[in-house]
Image (cartoon, rainbow, N blue to C red; front, side, top):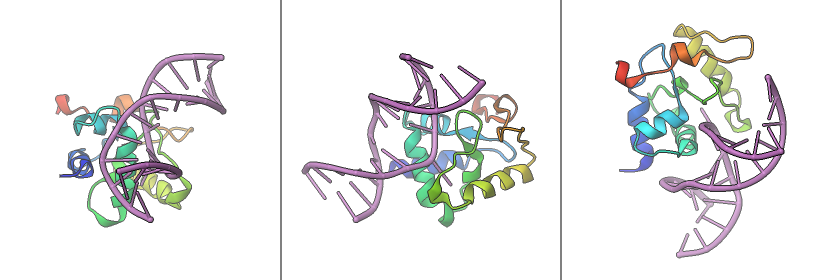
Length: 105
DNA sequence: GCCATGACGGAGC
DNA sequence: TGCTCCGCCATGG
């Protein structure tokens, strides 16, 4: 089983209306300090799976932009807003409010 | 099998 | 408060 597969398994557990950070997903997947791999993994699978990739954002509470995404980053924001996640003026979400807390169910 | 890459994170200035 | 730099390492060519 590849590291990517485990990452996807974790992402699928993120509840509707909540978000998780790359580092958090990496840790839960048993891959501490490999946040970059999480982002890379999602980049490679995004268009082909039902994984809620849009619920994964960076530690700052922002959507990670990349020229390779060609606008998918904006789509991500729309999908989150559709789930009730609110963004502030700086394009950030309040992690204290929306961050997924596995322990807390 | 070697090498560049990359949706990050966090320390340092 | 904000920008830069560096460590991390699986994947693909």
